[in-house]
Amino acid sequence: MLREIYAHFYKQIVVRMSETGELAGTFVWPLIGILSLGLFGKYLIVEGASEAAIPMILIGVISWNFLGIATRAISFGILYDLWNNCMKHFFNTAIKLRYYVIGASIFALLSGLIAFFIVLGAISLIFGNSFIIINSYILFGFFVVMLHGIAQGMMVTSLFVSKGY
Image (cartoon, rainbow, N blue to C red; front, top):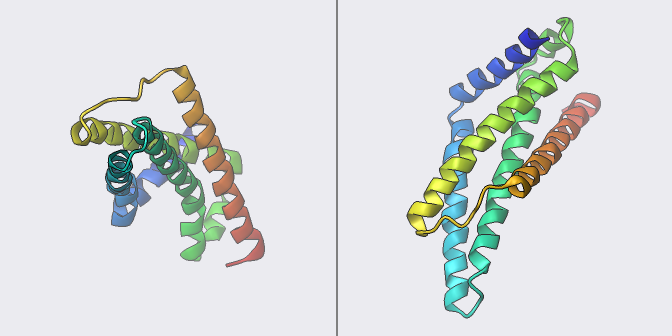
């Protein structure tokens, strides 16, 4: 069981390292989202909004990035096989679909955490504060967002596989 899960986890790493766009999805786009919406929050404060606007905007951006990373990790793993016309390799093996989901979910969690800590570092450098106190509520919230991303990715994948592309 662990070998099958690791095989799908490793496949996700190999696919992501070979695609520059996927690396940008983990490292570049979260920073662009933080910068653009963080500056928008600064503008809102200049226009008279509350100081609480920036943390709420930035937490929303972080959650949205985490959701996108989790969704892409689940859906693109099978969709790359579908687009390359090699789905028979996936279904001819003895590996069950749950091992794929677990391996891709572990990859989604790790890449989401990498993006999360990059964004936290950028927030403290760009905006000069570290407003997020990591506690059990924040971690539980991001876990729920990741579960939603996994479910969303599984739904997209199942629609592609069942209805065609």
